[in-house]
Length: 371
DNA sequence: GATCCCGGTTCACCCTCTCA
DNA sequence: TGAGAGGGTGAACCGGGATC
Picture: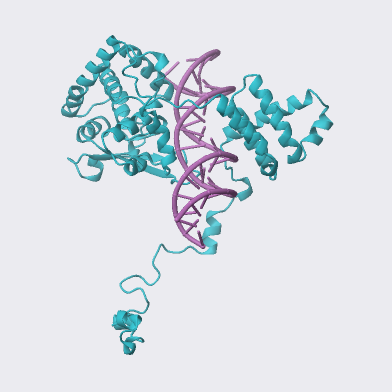
């Protein structure tokens, strides 16, 4: 009746009120009249904000701030080579003067062998110092572009799936159980290595935690993800579909304390063990396979297994296809295996073949304690 | 006006090295 | 094995121009 009235077919129904007919006092039939979370009042919100000064809320980490301040001091010192302190202060008052000076300083940095990132940070700092710097700073960014064209970025090579499997197998054979398991979790979950190294037991949501034993899914919660300050959520999670790995994680981590780190040592120790495993497999340093290659390797493996690009974006927790291209473009460069000598290829192949046996052993033998 | 694309801009993570 | 410093890289948002 309401629809025909609205459509004009039955003018006599135009005034029909479905809400009244449903004995509902508002237009949201079947819903709460004011849906959504309970609203806080001014007093309650003000109490929660007690002591917080918006002007003092830091938008960058203290470390970045220190780095940029130090770079700025270097720029000022460079100025002082040609003028006295009073003149330098005069030059640094307005963005219109700072910008061309920074351009010259950028060229100087390039000549003396400084890093491009230091110049980028310096420009960013100048923009924070002078709000109108953007009006004059185009030349500085042009210097950055030219610098990049001379020295293009080199992306980290992805970790081939076979090398990941072999590395995990070597770790298990040496008794580095958590290293091996976390390497596989990071690879399958397309995680940044730092994310898995920082994770604690409560970030790993096992089937037994959800009372869904026997399922193949488990989750890793990522607190403070990389882009936390720029959208993407303060907390993210990844889903891993692997029944064997889920069972192994149950045995290795189920009995750990909720605040216990999944990897009980530091990142440096992870890195040293990584180096030892790569050396044992005969993988040369020149191939630049580092723990940072795990995420790219996971992405490439998912792509190769036929996972839809949108699904990979979701699993990687990135928002732009452009970003994913960084990883997948490396497909062509993923000739790490072919670059290996025959002995190393044999080691990788053998290790990858052994992995299922190690995983089966960990799955069947019950709880595993220790690092 | 809406949408897409791309380059500009920004900032935290990762790697390497040194020292304890 | 851990801590810290310094440099390099990855990946996000933003805005403007192009296209429909």
